[in-house]
Length: 446
Image 1: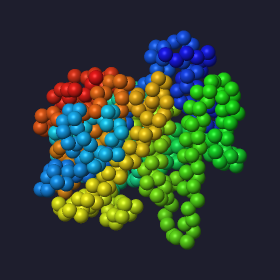
Image 2: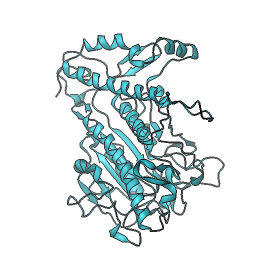
Image 3: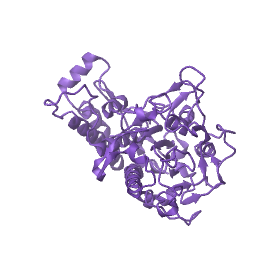
Image 4: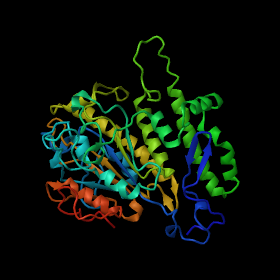
């Protein structure tokens, strides 16, 4: 139980000229003498879906277990994480790995519908004009958990999702459909996301005035910040200072991105804010999602960590070929090693995000305690472009509902929609059916 003398609204913000900065959960938002769980400030679950293309190196190549870098060894609680998942080893007790999951909706599609069908498990109806699929899992959740937040959901990517190798249609460019006709775009410009979260003027004239007066949102709320610090206790001061420091650090990194000198190069206009360094770009989008979760600006997020069919090279890993080209590994040992290294690198960036969630206080626990994150792909063996078995894990606490520390092996060809149905139940949104589900996965819920 948290006891405080002052009570600040959970919806309180720090306002300045053209900006409104939401606050993290503070002890001062909990009425004196009241248990946290009985208040409007009680932690609400945050839910994130993190997608990688091109599957994972599993036990479904001719080389079998010799090159399998994804599948844990053992079953139940006696499992050991493999190379790709090793970055999450310290969160093993918060992790559930699954075998034998299949998404029949994307079978035989190569790349064209993998992203959109990952969270829908429904094959698009191409006989219809325009987009025609189904509401995705994230949006089903947003309809229940996101209607009293500033943004019902947040859709992010690390790069443009319009890739020629993936077909470039409705279903390869997004993970999220609000309804069967409405695909939601994935935003990859961090400056646009930052302004979406915190604002920077309502009109062109106001934005110009802000630019002349100051380059920092934090400067605009300085007086309000000082006043709030005088109202709260030492613990809340630390939480507030850490949160505002995170905002300031992202502002600094965005300003740094604008300093590129391209005067000697003739280039088309590029969105201001996208970072040249891919590691920084990937982590910037993770950080923005983390801030949005901490400030309760949204409770539901999707993140395409790299686009389907991407030609991106991973030179920072000593890998010069493009991700998509390497994914056609033809069982060549060197390509399998390169692909494993790329997939491990992505998991390392996800683990960094999990570190942040675990270190961020949220009421009577951490953001990780109160979150449920799903990470994985809608492809299995990228050389074959097949969709079984899918590499997918759950990580988090789900407000005490997720039974972590286990590798679950359901029957072969278990519909991935069974996992989706289970996720909904973990979040307190039970449904009888989701797409082609045949029931919930046993043993996942405490």
